[in-house]
Image: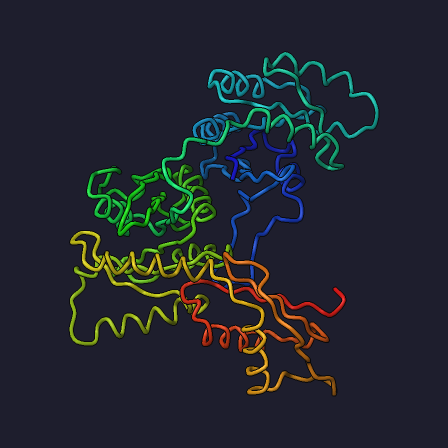
Length: 439
């Protein structure tokens, strides 16, 4: 992931159209994973093989009935604080306005790289004469763009990547290190866990939810294995997201999931499972990451003989869409069962990168289809010919069949369960791709 690019500008200059144009087909607002909805404000985008996160600050309009300028200044300030490169969008049809000049001065003072986009240059051939007055903003060469027709967006993204800071090359950990993202709601005890493990105060730990604003990395070694712990800003409920910085915090958490090999999803035992937890878990599941669910503050729960059993049962229902993820009951405060958590992290990672030989897979496939006949529809029966593993992280299997339409979700689930029964693969999602012969 190459950094955060923020789109700033007045209302109606075409920020969202530009945003959708850059993101293209990959804009996912909803997904079929239960509990996973996407906010429209940020998305992953790609240019010449490099990925980056694009943020549409137009979505960050404050609730107050405030004047346009103060909104713009606030958005610009947020972008200045959090983004690596800023795209400042203006409108050629309205020329340079006082608000544009004001925000340009602010962006200029910040010293952050700014790419000036003059939108709505929709004609072909020479740019309109009004285009040249945008040089007066003092932000360097403007780039003429038509976000409706798409021309100029390539030059715009080239300019963005010229200004993108280099990724930090001096890594302080080895290639074999397992990257672990600790994710969950604010105040679930993420920083306390990382501190307990690291044995020193690496992060500011306090009881104020959302103290950790950005992801912080801690490198540790346990039993000869190196781990990089990525502590992330907590992910809050949407209704609480009035404090705009939280939008960026959620974004950082998603980016941490993208970087990680294993996600530790932290649940506060005193509060139980919330909708917010399902969002994070859903994102990790969707990205194919190995996951461990850590139930923290277990020492603070009043228990009798059945408490853990009942709690586990309830969580199994809540996390039904990722039934492969193991549960570990811990206390970050006392260090209780933290060793067990590490065993699980190491084990689920080994499962996520596992490869299974084609011969063994096809033996299993033969057994599975003999045990439960593939479904048929209107007299035509599904035939599964052959199966192979295409990739790991997560384990992805390609099955060749006579008709993809017949390979229903329920039978795919059955095959997935058979794979798990035969080969384990605990703690990691599995992807199954159906292909017809000749594809």
